[in-house]
Image 1 (cartoon, rainbow, N blue to C red):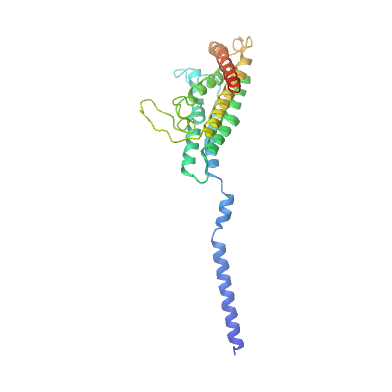
Image 2: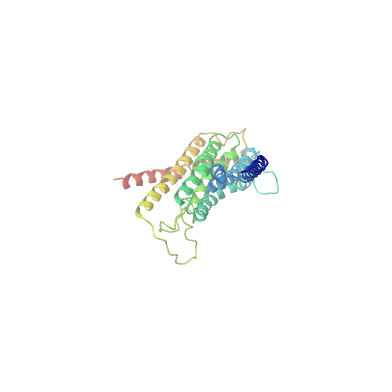
Length: 269
């Protein structure tokens, strides 16, 4: 028969074991909490890209619209340099990041979802609306002209290998932004297999993105066609000629946009 002293010693030992177990449990992180609370790799990467774009756009917004160094580049080249990081992220870093993340996390992230999210957050929700607003309403003519010129630059850069309007290859699985495209001089590149349904969906996305860029370009150009927008004597005359030329380029995106809509209507029957 167990004595009272033995029983008390046994209870004390059990309490000590329980306290030790509780301490160990408290010191170990809960893996499920980490999984539920952690941001996805895609969200973290896009946050970084967004911060780079916002920083460049803030620098552009705060620019006085005059050349900061009389012996350096003219104001138009200087503003184009300020906006260059926006172009790089919009046209190249965004699609490349989406492809890299989808390849690194095949069980977690799908390529099409990564590309769509990168385009929406960087271009549809940030770059295009902000540049449109600047082109329509900035009080500094040189910055209006730079904003208008950026639409042309984006259209050109988006057609490069690996970007949203990649025109370097007809292979759907290689064409950007879902593939790296075909660089000049790369020779013959084998294209991975690809389903017809995915090809159709990606082609529709390409048409929609091209149309959105051209539509924003037209919207940005039209207000600048008003007489005196860039030629008012009280404004910075240094930007007058460049501004008029940029505004007059509205004809080019208008024609492209009309051709896109006509082509889509023909495809739809």
